[in-house]
Length: 109
Image 1: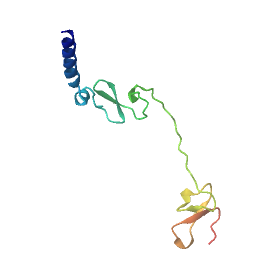
Image 2: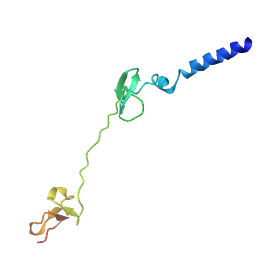
Image 3: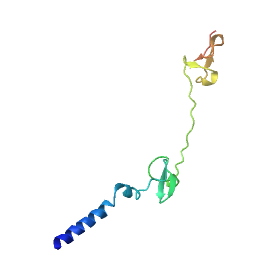
Image 4: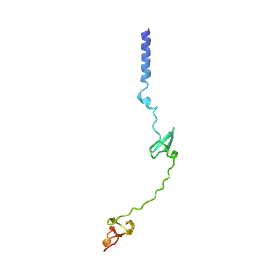
């Protein structure tokens, strides 16, 4: 009698365990609702995280950087299109109206 009871409990356990297959377990795994570069900071709520540090960008301290633009210039002997590209008091010398010239202090034609 005792063996029949243990065998019966074993069969019932097998039915219960076999009911939990992989397909049923997948329903408990939620897919992410936020697409990169957004992150989920609360359940169902997204915020922007452009630098990918897992902190909402609007929660990060604002860094103000003053960047002064530097004008790049072309040194003597290098190609140019007009005088504004040449350094200092150099001019863009173009021979025979050729589109590309060269930077120089004196244009000898």
